[in-house]
Length: 414
Picture 1 (cartoon, helix red, strand yellow):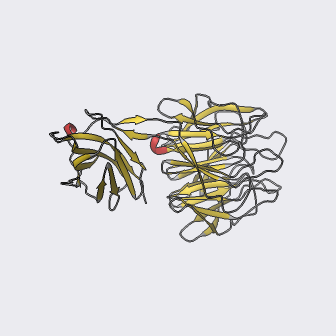
Picture 2 (tube, one colour; picture 1 turned 90 degrees about the vertical axis):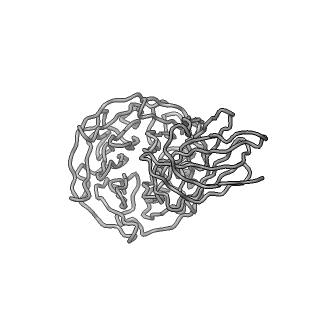
Picture 3 (cartoon, rainbow, N blue to C red; picture 1 turned 135 degrees about the vertical axis):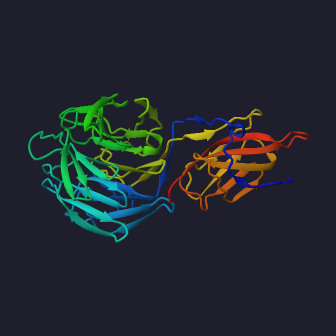
């Protein structure tokens, strides 16, 4: 096969590019390396860059060990032990390059609060959480601020609905408007953009209500109820770049669930996705890195049957395009970190590929073409959204050169 003019460059010209459409699937689960610290439930997690972190928890005894997972290598590495007392059901979140963990229980309820610096592999105690000591609260971050709310404190059915903001620059806590639902523990919390979300949980009854908090106005607004059964101690995370949040697993009063649901911020609707591929469970932990979500550990209800398995969720959104000769393409992985492959439906000759940013800046990078596959190396491409347009002709004699496919690439930070 004769290949000419194999190059990658930018031209922002609508006549060369076709509209990208989306193909949605139910998503797929892929098992990754088991959590390095062994079996447990009630662990706490967060992510920083392309690394995930899980620590503390309960497996019949309480833990302080703390582990880092490398997304690229699928390897767990033990890091410095959490510096507070061993505990379970703590709250955690990350802000920038630092992770934070606090509250929980270790026989008594706790309100101490700690910062983890991965560059130094050290823990530093910060100002204690300003609410009452508690466990099974939710934690998430929005921009440069972190948030902890709800949970259970000392006392019979002493469920909380207070909500607090942590400012790492000042090392201070500020009380915000109380959570809009009832006081509860075992809820799920995550953030998308400048909005925070809390839903499900237990207030004496399992719940499925779902609420949005607006950081700018400090107000709570009830959204569409969670799509599954009412439950507590589920696991959730968000994929902020897609405007989607996810909740799954948990205990609904009858069984340990493995169903898994996606919430769309733009439409305020829930859609059931592929069931979590591990055994149904509660008290697991989850986080996201880029466009992928992760769930691991937890307790499956058969005695003290704690787990150490760890799973990756891919929502299954793939960018597909159709040209006049029905030559679609498949892009994987997308988003990409180091490279991606565009697979064309039909084999073509004289291939060239145009790549452009949203602002119209020309970019170049290395590619290789073989048969019907184009491999794009990230090289010096900055993170962000790019559109591509593939020009060429089919293998049919006499075909003119034309646009054969187009689509969108998303490049993640290293």
